[in-house]
Image (cartoon, rainbow, N blue to C red; front, side):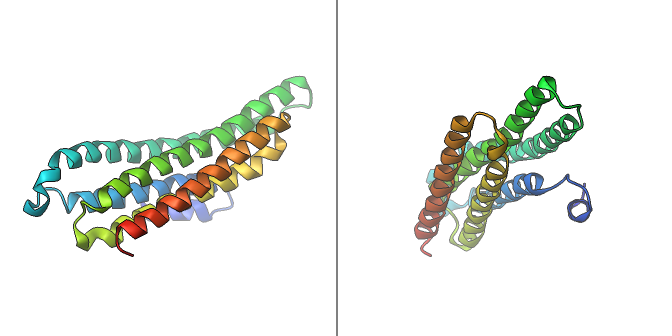
Length: 196
């Protein structure tokens, strides 16, 4: 859908697209800004020695953008599974399915966070090989990736307390917290590498 239609869909009184879908879209926008920074740099004589790097990074970024888009669809599907399961009659079958639905609702934002961190690591490697006029776009892309990680952490935190395996829930939450700290550090590193 168009950007206008997506924003309208998010604004509606409907659970999807919601925070998870927005997180994936923000991540994809972060990738796109990284790709723009790369595309305005590659092919320039000043950076000719980095062309093999640009070729490799361009492929990685294109895959990352597609993966974020897939994760938006996965988020909608996970919520749909959760909502359908919540309507089942109470009993052991519902309880088991609800735990599966919660696992899916946690796994998707965890994957988004991992992808956001990988994106930021890639953007950090580009920072010292980037057209200086595009550094603000590179930093904006990294900021959006960090935001996707934070939004994903919110989704993990809201779902973890419903897990019956409390120890597993604590471990997932700690892992998410650690990843968020990593994303914040990477953002600071990227800003420093860009001279800001």
